[in-house]
Image 1: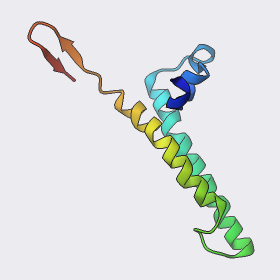
Image 2 (image 1 turned 30 degrees about the horizontal axis):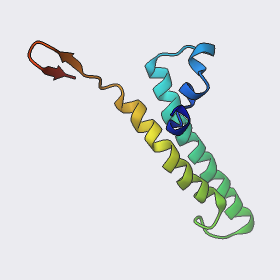
Image 3 (image 1 turned 135 degrees about the horizontal axis):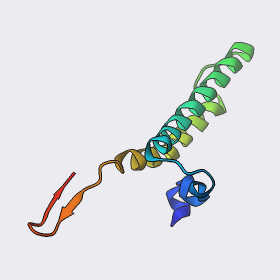
Amino acid sequence: MKVFALDFFELFNIACAHPMDYKARLYIITLTPIGLTAAAILIRAATMAAWGGTMLEGYSIKFITTFIFIALPLCATTACSAFSCDDYDDDNLSFM
């Protein structure tokens, strides 16, 4: 199931090679898609300046939409994992 989750930290067991806390992992998982998206937009802008065309015609925009579709669940799962619940057996209560 690790392959289908697309969690590269768990898939390649990066924590063994370079241990990191939750904050560093959250920064990497959220800033990497932003950086790759910005790079793809800049590449498309350079292509438009050189050869013309519109922003939506190139492969970079198709890459951006596909990449965001794949990366968004991983980002959301990592960000929402900060909110863990504490369960109490005495009164069947759980608190965040």
